[in-house]
Each structure stands twice: as structure tokens, then as C-alpha cells.
Length: 362
Image 1: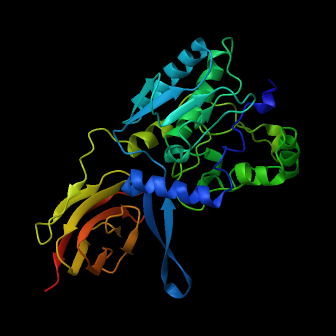
Image 2 (image 1 turned 135 degrees about the vertical axis):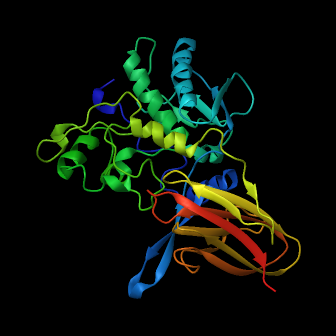
């Protein structure tokens, strides 16, 4: 296998560049975890605020994911399994390898020359008989470090991580020599659209690996000096970086409290956004149609999002700072049903205390 082929495939079968697949992806993510859909306020023209919707693809925290091999040699399967299980020390998830029955992650070795994985909950949109992950060059005599590099990387995708060079914070950090990059990947059968989509394009939202570009991430491609302007290169990362570890522990925290239930007219919930990027989730039930006032209070610049009724992925309303100071306030007439609230810091890198309450307007 040529060294230039040892990166993720530009395509994930059935999911890349398809609008219908994107809709299914969003629906699966929203059904899995309420904070997979977040609102980020952005300043528009004339001082007005608009909103951007972020689409995360994280699994429900604490979940057991069933993993099954569709094919492959037993000795190769064993090495993949042992390395994949390392993720359990970083994230509050269990990887249960099974020999039969349904599985969220299904591994094949059939597509030679290409390794890839669906990202997080995108696996739920793949037909149950098809692979969600492929390893195209692992053999019994493949060096251990290559196993570590590719298996840690692909299972990072499977748990919700994207390529680090597509992190918004990576924009402008890598001095790509674009003509040489196009020529390099053309040798692997990539056209210019493939290169733009997989190499140059960064995500617009902050639903990414990290808040800062991390060239040491296990999710970062190698960048040879021959493809950059000046003297710049990134080697083949085989270990989890400190930022990888911190990020996954934040997204899948251990000993996380269960989603809190709010009582309409009850005492305010005193809590905090303890870590950068944290999103708190709450739920409440409306018994009869009425107008309700939902507010945050405290020193933290909060963004409050209301989801429902009956659909955790549906955004009904959101607010940034219509409350006192930098707090949020929503006033909505709600019909009977089940609703969810998510609270996040406006600054993705900040934390702070706040309280949340809901009451019926007289």
C-alpha cells in the first residue's frame, strides 16, 4: 500500500454530499441527545442579533455502543478491538463488541485502500446490514503504531469528532500550497471538489473538536512540508493529545447528573456551566395551555433555547440577553406537552454560575 493512501477516504458511502442524508443525520442526532442541537447568537447588521444552529453528532452520555465485525481476520479484529477500547478511558461510553445481533458500529475490511468512519450518530442512518467503519490496509503484519494511528482516529470519528484541520480555528493556520495539494490528492483519485470538501473547507459552526487548533490531535492528518508554503509540516500523530483527552472528557463526562426536571412555579435551580463548552439540559411538562416566563439569572452570559413540544430536536424559541444584564428571558404561550431547555455560555470558551426558573404568567 502506497504511503500516500493512508488517510481517510474522501467519501463515506451514502452520506457524503447528499441533502437527504444530511436531513437524516440531523434527525438522528437530535433524537439521540438534546444538546446535539444548539443555538449560537451572532451579531448581524444594524446591531441586530441572529442565530446559527449547530449540529453536533454526540452519543447520549453513558451509552453502551454495540460494535460488530462484518468480516476480517480474527487476529486483525483482536488488535482493532483492543485499541478501540482505549476510548473508554477518555469518554463515558462503553464499547461492547458482539458477534451477532444489532450494533451501532459495524466494521468491515472489505474496501481495500480506504479507511473511513461515519461521524457519531450518523451511524444510525446507515442500513443495518452495511458497514459504518472500514479499515482498508490493516494486515496481521501491519506495525502496531499504524494500528494505533488509524484505529484511534477512526473511532474518534465514530464517537463524534471531525478532522482537526477542518476546525474553524484551523482557518489560516496551515499555509497550504493549493496547486500542490490538488496535484498530490489527484494521484489518489480525488478531484478538486474532494480536496476542497475534505482539506480546505472548515466548519462554520463551533461544533468541532476543540476551541483551538490542535496540530497534535489524533484527528489531524499529516501535512508534509512539500504541500505547504515556506517551512511547515505536521507528522503522523499516533497518540491522543492532551486536548483530545480534555475534549472527550468534557463531551462525555463521568458522574454527570441526570437531566433535571423543572417545576413550573417552583424554586429556581441554582447551577453552573463548570467547563468551557458545557451545555446544561432540563425538561418540564405543561399540563394546560398558558403563557410561561422562563429566565436565567446570575453573572453568566447565557443563551437559553426552548425545544419541543414532544420533539427534542425542534427549536421553538431562543434568547441571548433579553433578561436582566446578560441573562436570557423567554415569554411563550405553550400548549400541553413535554418540553426541553438547554443553557450554554455565549462564549464557548467560558464558564460561570446561573439560576434557571419557569413560572406561569398571571
